[in-house]
Length: 595
Image (cartoon, rainbow, N blue to C red; front, top):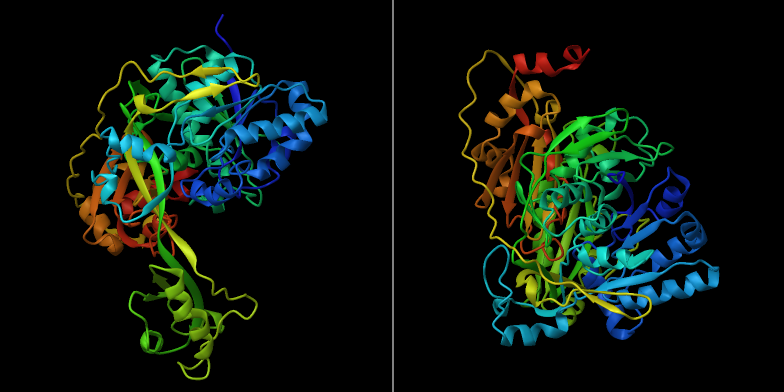
């Protein structure tokens, strides 16, 4: 008899997510598995200092605090818990949880997965001829400007599966892929083989949808104003069937909503195109279909799987300099001249090696009704190769000294505390390493080790090439309206690239949207992409056009100078642009047409 779907609930999308999430999930609808993702790419770089100063540190301590009150209930209800909160030290986190479980009297077996940390092996790998070529540029890592301080490979989900098969109740991981937190328990539950590629692909898609927590339940959704109460959107649940298809839902008691559009938003988030790479399977997203299956229930099907690539990504971080940021405000008229004066004053006696950038945020209203409608922020960033150079320059001290001698009305937020201490600028290198070079293993609570072999079959995947659309035909009168009138969008980051998916929530707008959003048109709508390579793909099943702006974020969100460091607001900016939409499309998609 076919196993029923496994119900997997997310309780964290990043380090810093809502601390009460585990409390909420435990009080919500019944689930079989709870998964928590804490490791954005830069998070490991933030944890490395603690790990190097204390061998028992390097993991996410807040996870222990979150889980502690629920250990007995987890044991009694036989809930499986999977997390990557192990960071640099999954063994230490597993040991800490065993101590907590023993103190609580909870009968829980706790395992961990290791083998992702390759920092100590970098010289050995280089000597063996592994160049860790950059995923985006192809350059070898020895051309990098930074000295590495952390290097972690992305592992697949089979170590998790192996630990669960041996009776583990909690599995602690380091840098596995976000979706591996879901594919591991799904493969264990349904007894999948490593060649069940279509099923694995479906689980990766489900994992991608729920890995970012409330984002699938209306968080960060461009249609947020139509979803009702979003003050505390709940965390999502994926019900994954034996064939890999899934139903995305949420706890009935929680806020937010699960709709085709909230799920689409997460599907097009932080991808590089229709081919989605995972250490266990290459996923074809082109045929993924979404269907509303009742209130807060969206059925996901159509993912196609094939063998994984022979390489996996190694996220390497290194310090490339230091930075200090301060913000002052300008009000009223002649703002460009005020900015010019501030820049020139900050250039006086600027030491060699120190760079200063002033960015104006906002434009004063033409006839402001309040002082704040007339006010813009001026963000001042100073960078230098060394902390000593920035300390000598003294950006915050200089800004403070200008209040009686700069442009009229200069001020800073009096309720904020200006910080003048330089902080490191961390650069990111996404290197490629053969999966066969990793020592992927599951370590059980009795110390026994299960080695995870690399995949038997691999392929060299490519993104498909989609031709530019034909021009929009002349179908009659148009109206100049914001693009967001007929389209949703979600944007994010993949290393130094920013991506944005733009889709029509109403199928009637799709033929126009796909023709209108050519690469040239998006380049016009988004001047920041001038001179960048732009990759365009179409997702007809989702009524979506997807763009990758290569290099918009420099070499990564942690080191570029953009205020929107990881491109979260690119989609909303594009939706604000005024575009000519045919009146026939507006008539077919407006409120009257939906009644």
